[in-house]
Length: 151
Image (cartoon, rainbow, N blue to C red; front, side, top):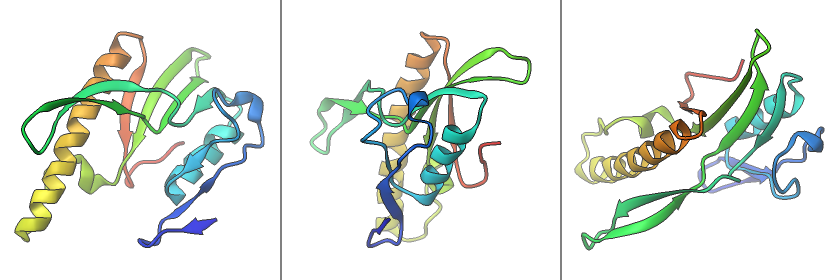
């Protein structure tokens, strides 16, 4: 397990049930302890049939600092297929983000506020593209923050 400068935990995840992973089982990387915990939940939950992390690529358009529009790629954190309590097959695409990145900045510092709002705006563009992509495929898209968890 490696720690970054910010104190976040990052490392490769080794699943106990590699047959459930839909992608490169040798390249499952988590960028936070919360992602690691989500991976463990997905790996060990018998109702989860398949899952993957950053295996789906969604194109989106984003503005550059020069004012141009650039094609970009968004890699959502988790895709999963599971059986709900009624036995119905469900498909979800999930992004794990700190709550402060899911709304406009409330910082009083102008520089911080500018940066946080740029991050928020970029996230919105990604999430709008993901929501559209998911709706076309009958997949639910949701964003999880520290106030929510898998259960």
